[in-house]
Length: 498
Image (cartoon, rainbow, N blue to C red):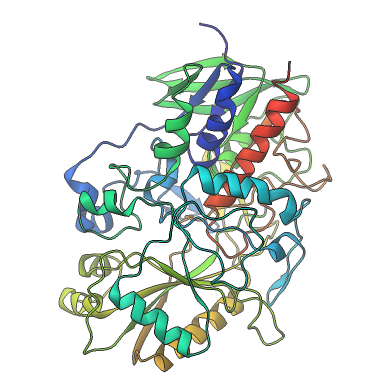
């Protein structure tokens, strides 16, 4: 078999978007994916199966910082975690790329500014057919083009919430979403977050990026094939050792792109030790695995006992009034957006509430998501212990998050919802994982350059959320896709130019 010109490890948002952008080059592209394709099943729209029985969560264990095992809920399917995501495709704000003072400290900034990312954000929005509108959110940075599709309309209860928030002087805005709402609802009138996409209703890594890449005969997807370590000699990566059908083999290639998510990408680099690289590959800086971030998040439920929420797809609204300010010294607090509708079975499975009370609350609640930035900390990190992943996630900027939640609860009461409940999300589930292989211009303090190219190995790229220097306070998927498109342009110009 002919050796591939490039191996992309992982078919999630970064890997699939990169493959779509590299495919027209005609080069032989091999995508390695540990998992298989999700197949339609009765469990797809069953909240009991998803939330109570954890039907789709792999039965793996990582260790936390205290050495205690936990199940992380990191998905391994074609399309990666995007198969279960909420499909919110938000840009980082311009201010996120510069050092920014928070209640918990100051972010380091990026080696590039928003202007360098903007064309690729626009391409990513077009690729993923994002539905949205400009002009509603005062924090929205400059766009070189408009959204190609109108926003998903508010259901009546959400339109009423939007109006109530406006009357308080706030700026509710339409969430930019990667969704074919008609297709999603045609396959079952159910909610959204954490439900698997087996119908193409979500614009995810498989249904968009990978589907486009695989239209080209030079692109091959190999499922059930897990990368175990990278092989390097004399400063260059020469191949990938994989496990497939119970046997180990090495696939040689002149170019490797790592895209398995912030935790797994760091773990793979750390596992790739040899005599030349005793601390793992791309780790001359000792930064691989460090600066893990994953957002501070809480669910906030607002209800009036005499009003029911009849919404099916309520996830259409966000608010950034406290994104850049709101703290006691004007510090940023974060983003507020609607969750997919929390139903009785979901609430009963994820809380200690008795089932009748859970259903009563869920039938009336408006369900919001408060998200604050998690700041980079070199001691917040991924390591390996006897080959097992250890995720020691250090809490940061928590006071800012508590302030955001309290402000939101007070506003919701003023808006006419007398009962407002909140609960922090489980910090052991890395749904917005980032950091661990940060980009930077100094090889002594970073792992890759601004294109995702390793400082230590010039034929190794990393294209996932591990290279993000900061987490901002927005969902990372669109930024991952934009970085992948930027890396693809660089690879096409520098590696595939001849």
